[in-house]
Image (cartoon, rainbow, N blue to C red; front, side, top):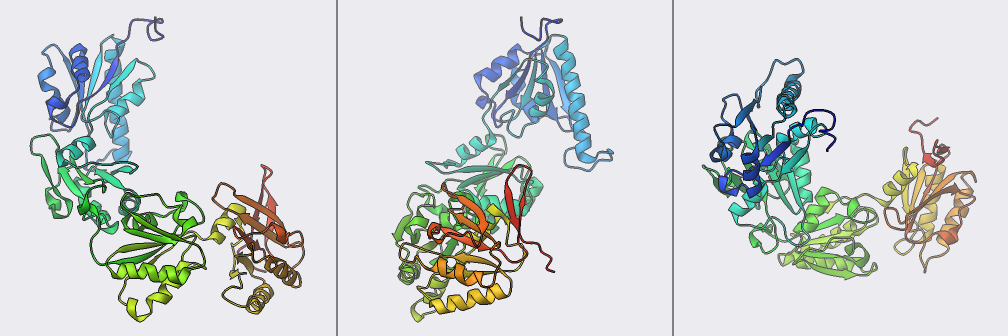
Length: 503
């Protein structure tokens, strides 16, 4: 005997019945069986009384079924409820659950009908959350409008390792834009009055040319077409926008003249990409970059990759611009931010030469190594700071030393890039020696290595304790000012921070 039976009369069972996208022939056999077994059939409707769910299941309803129409107090209009729209709906769901509970307590089986799938943007879930802990409950899945839309378009949604993102059109426009830019394929639900904002988000994310429109898939009045050509005034709530798979679909790939996008990937892997950089990498026909940075970028079918070592920046830039001049969309991949000791300068320098002056170049920012290391340590860059590269390959050491002295004399926090390598072993020791002439030995130093990567190490020590032999090209050093603090947190960890007020 179940827990629901041993302390009283046998209670009824609750079913959430997915009916599919609208065509009654797309109901599952299990959905039909459950409706046939049910004593009570409940369904949601607007105040006009017509229920789409009921109309889908109509031929399976019997005269002896007890019908429970759950009529929404509001849909999209305003309400004078003291709790506003949300308060009115919460009150409605509580009252609806109480009505169904009365049937369940009387031992009746209750089937709540739901268009599509009961737990996919469906109203049934509000009943499930309120009743499933007290009564036996079973959910019968249904074909979603997403699957129906793809079927009616005859276009794959996703293939291989592509990612599908499903979005409600009620999200803020900027959020929609960012999420559309960052994904491979997408479906935007709940159009209607949200359609103008969704269309702008498609355009802002560069996806408008790919987007398709599906209205009332599998139902009477079905309509499909190109989203950009759809009249906003004609779009109902039961419509979706679809950005389908790009694989094997040439029409989905952006067209137009070649260009170079210099893309910052942040200090490590995909977690550090922005929606903007994800979109640029996905749109590119060719990726060019230092092999280590190229390996951070997810592989896309049909994309060509050209990797090289980190000592041929000008040649790499010229190669990318040549490809773009021949009509290719090229992404030059750079670690961190491309404008901070990275590829943007190299590309722009070459792009200023006569053969490439007409090639469009975009620079897309990324999280810098300094910012990533600072966040891992706390907030040592919370006040004025200077960023200096210790590499003397492109400028003499005398210039580096002069800038270190000037920044130290100004009491700026220092972010030291490219501190050492196998061929440059003495620069960190010389910088430490120079800084100790102007900074206290107790000055905090953040030694951050492989931030965001599998070997991340972030240590805080003093300038006097800094051991140059432990520093390599994967390390960045943050040297505190006279005001930089190191404090101990209750969990035993230490954080480094520089106050924004200066005495």
